[in-house]
Length: 531
View 1 (cartoon, rainbow, N blue to C red):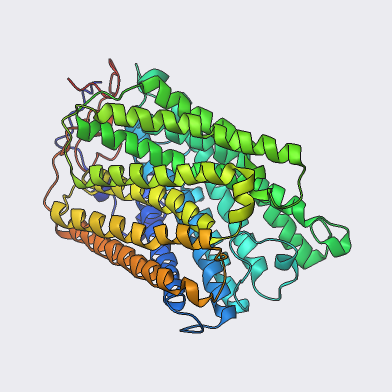
View 2: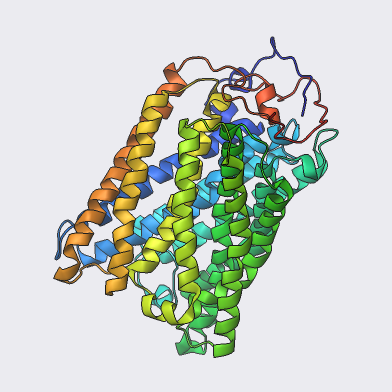
């Protein structure tokens, strides 16, 4: 892959226009990506604080720092913020917005105004959701299960309407990415020459467009039931609360792959760059992303194994859920084969990629365990599910986000960070995560239920260990925030290609010129031509 850009005198996007208003009205995909970065990191800080407060309360039996009602509200806000405001928009909206056009040799996304609107939808929806605090908060959990979410006398209406508005951000981002990939690729950039991060974002965009409207309509129906008294889900009015679960999980399980597919794309970029090898099985990895996206729409029923669905439906959903492991295993095998006999550099982005491999594999294997109906009935709504969910979502997505930030931070801001302190953050986050969540597998096997404010004395020691681990994670992320801020403000100037990467973004200056490429690049080879 080659580019003929020479931009020594080109002004970069950071200095193209100055002032807050220029940022709030920008149509530059790179600036919008940074706006998403600031927004997502802010929400991550808030959601992380809620998580640590939960673990303070669970450090010992009985009441410690909050009441049972307050615990339910903190748990709800932690889950809702992390899912809807951090993990779902984190990679596609932030890193995807910034990197995708650079990866395919485009000057911007296809619809810059819609791109900016998508960010405003996220912010406005978040403000509406947070305003629920003025009306008694929310204690339904982030899943908003009916009929409780219909009748509880608090600010649930504001949260579901806020999530409804945030859904438009996801839809608009997905639409933009699909059109951009189809229409704005540089000459010679065929589908089989696109970086695999683009394949992951493209597959994710399909899920965003097809699945998000289902959630939006479902949340709007909850608001209609609360405001107008219609009876879609309320059994007292002839509705069906199980129907809500079908609607909710028809979106929310594909949403898992909105979170994890882009993470897998990042890991692919990191492994091939820091192994100094051509990616093993390029087409298999690309098609496995499409396969995961397709199968994700047919597995929602495994969330309803104990809801009374038919035995045949349970068997079918169990089988299809296990089938998801096939394209996922293809990726893991190809990543491992890429590293085999590679010249591996254990820089901080690569450490986070390896952390992803370890944690996500545990999450995936325990997912197969939970797909077995007999086992799921035993572990349903226990801390085993909490541990599985966090190993997939936090251990997977957030590890990839951190690896991606460290990998592309020099390109985004033109500044280098402290490699020593970046590695320290990996050590704290990786060790803290396993200390926090592995004991929860044991707690779940012992029978401790999830979402409970208090617990039996026999669960106390493992809960203390879990709480210490969560605070270690928090320390790691706080240090990482300091590393990022220091790098942006005082870091050494970054070269155009500090890692020796082969994709197009490394052929231009750091930070990139305002319109990315002064001369349209001509693509003559694949994206990972290491020799």
